[in-house]
Image 1: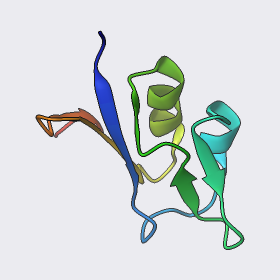
Image 2 (image 1 turned 180 degrees about the vertical axis):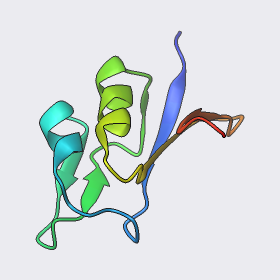
Image 3 (image 1 turned 90 degrees about the vertical axis):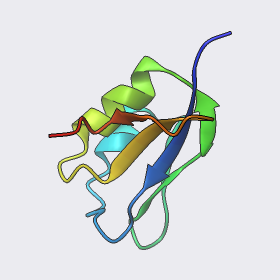
Length: 77
């Protein structure tokens, strides 16, 4: 069994670019205020979800390992 992630979008940072939806349409949706929401806040680790987080121009998406809380993205400085 592979890793599972907790997906979180900081809506105080999100600018509604839609890059996450364009990259991972199954993983994210935009609400009427153009704020991103993870479709599945707990999900299997997936390349498309990571790509979506990496594509966010303001790094509003955080991925952590379920259980340990270890940060997968964004990388720590």
